[in-house]
Image 1 (tube, helix red, strand yellow):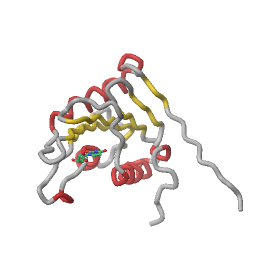
Image 2 (spheres, rainbow, N blue to C red; image 1 turned 180 degrees about the vertical axis):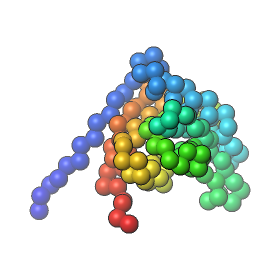
Image 3 (cartoon, rainbow, N blue to C red; image 1 turned 90 degrees about the vertical axis):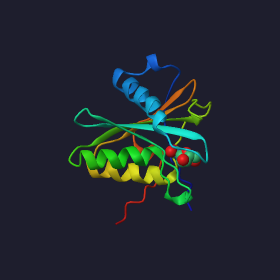
Length: 157
Ligand code: THU
């Protein structure tokens, strides 16, 4: 038996001003996208913004439903919209912002497992790393690629 290790690094920023201009724009779009949340059950508003290889930014917000499994996260709303609008373009980056009743939380908006799997597939489709920005009230985390938030990605079929 051998003990193996998986090493993950990420960047932590403490203000929007520290980000490069493209990331700053994307984070700002994700924060604005929170306004599109429909969350009558959880009251947790999430916004996401995807940057495409043609420079376009596509937003999404979480949409809940009385039949709970029928709702969808902000990230998948944004990625599915982006994939539908620009099927031939690559998704280069996604920013996620969330908090109770639209107020950014102290803990960053970290994507659920299902959304990470969808990110993984679009990253594999494009063959380029998709970076992920997770926004909190007073910090922003940046991961360079989906592998960093979903080690041992399922991609067998
Ligand atoms: N949600 C997202 O939109 N993205 C996440 O990364 C985690 C959770 C939504 C789903 C649901 O509408 C609400 O937040 C509470 O879980």
